[in-house]
Image 1 (cartoon, rainbow over the protein chains, first blue to last red):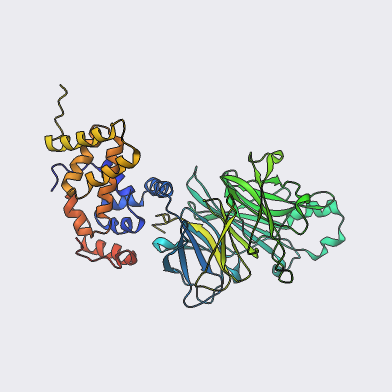
Image 2: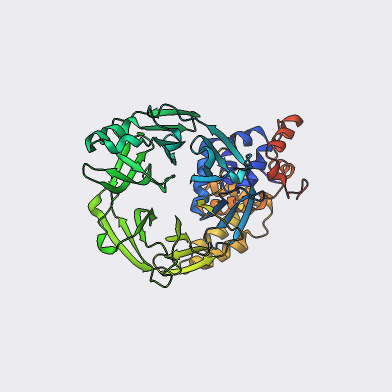
Length: 381
Length: 117
């Protein structure tokens, strides 16, 4: 057939260009190929190549249990259905929330055991890891039922580590009796932060001096600049101010980014944080009011032109979105925002052209929705 | 004269044809893409491998990348046995080890004919 055998360096380049499922099969060809396909450097280069070719998906999975529940992948350019994959781990009777999606790996939690029963799963290659971690040592007199649990998931490329952050705050009823300064100090005792490392496959407690935050999003919205971002209330001396709480995946420390002053944009605006043209952005919208469905839906997009510099927040877009937004879901890499409307359909709105398109989904019900890219991550579990 | 001992005349001729097209002053990107399609279409696997080796040896990035992509496209749905035969690879796996891999990743063999060629 061929006059010279191809050297392994060239075979490596050819293999990097193969689709993920072919590579899973070709582990069987010989030991050298198997070891290469499982090598983390190869896996990351393969993923980068797929990203540069623009092959991406949107993944959805029903929250509530249904015997036919599957991971459903849509092409992120055309929104056509691409694949349906059965959930590889035992999920009967479970309600699932997707915490985040990085490099083809999802982090999910069972709502009944939120934050204590977690799954890392790569649906494309049907691999998963079960992570159970009970909550201990939060507050003394608190009732576990009043604990608020917030999760975040991110990837730190410098150590090739996928991390899960869990923040547990116990809601002590006696807080209201205390003066503000005591309340400020007390929150560190009542908050416990643990971080899971996928490389170590273990948890570590993060020691806090103070934690003047009140979180309300159960999961984070965004990972950028090596940090996980959540909206949260910052307990300033006189009041609670809405801001962005950050957790740096490398240093494992918390930080703070203030929001712009958007008072003049209107009242009763809701906030959604995402990435627009690679920059941290704040999307403001009025949640649709069923009693006044004819009202115009004005939305605003503020972009932080220089990450971390609060004075660089710039109002970039005023758009009108029709139909109205019930629940924003995700910013896509094509400068669009996807949200659920009042008909439980998905609406894709392209920011720059202000055009909207409705995607009718087969599934009805509360959907987890995230961007997704197929990869070999977690091939060996 | 620069001797090129590792490349046979036929492959070199093909590489030169490619380079001539790609260095044409008035050839648009679209025209080049069309040329690549026709040039590489229907090339036998053995010819592609020789072209890959040649392009790599001569450090012609564009051609090398194109040819590798062609080889990848041609092999992605093939069986494991076809890949071994084509690349002259001996598998050191025992039959038990092979069965184990096929069992662990059974989904990847769904819809693939075991003798696909």
